[in-house]
Length: 141
Image (cartoon, rainbow, N blue to C red):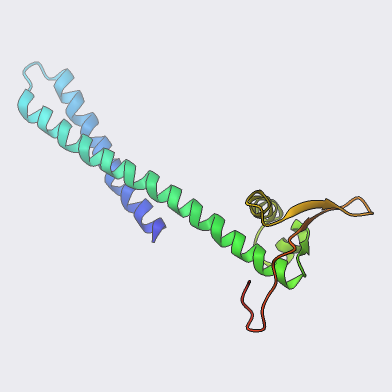
């Protein structure tokens, strides 16, 4: 839904920019412009363009936030299935996330206080989440 709203916002903004530029050019180039009409056109399409731009930006922000939450949920499922101790490679292997996306999701979860980084005896860095388990119905607790 956010992608559709982003497309609509762009669809609203682009023609508005065209009409604003056209009206401004006419106002500047025409020796005897119809000032009232051109100012009205400029004001109308400026408002419409700003609305489209705000709609686009707001939905991009909401889409990114939704995607971050989705990636964190995927990571949490793998964390629970692995007993609370994982590496980003394991998350990426069991989900459709790239390794850097898995690492970012794990870092956000650690930052929120759900887990911590720990170094193994072999020198590997693992993410430890002690309080995440799956109950008998398969839901995270």
